[in-house]
Image (cartoon, rainbow, N blue to C red; front, side):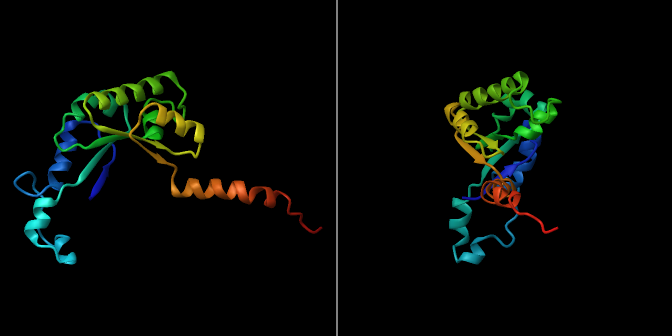
Length: 171
């Protein structure tokens, strides 16, 4: 399956404008030039008939949160994912994930997704197992846990930081 995480979705109209170009006619407006089938030896008919991209809208702003019910009605949408850093910044509270307004906004997005039977995810940027457990308990369908850079920094700090602090320089 081919998947696209669509950033900063704030309205159904803008999401649909993007999504229409991810599907082949008659559903969408995607062109047929150099399709993947050419590289794998599939027949064009099989590839064309089986092709169904997975589209996940990132909700990262107050505007996207405000329009969540409308966004969830898109026939092209498979799910949504909350981008907590950008969403908290949009609420003028960057990184304040325990803030009541931030939590209320995330809860309303989660409730709306469940109501519309769409998959919902959360980007848990910092490697914090207690926060990961909260996301699971809150019934998120998927959690993106960390980033490559955060994971490397975290691993280095655990394994090497103690050793680095113990290095003594010669005088």
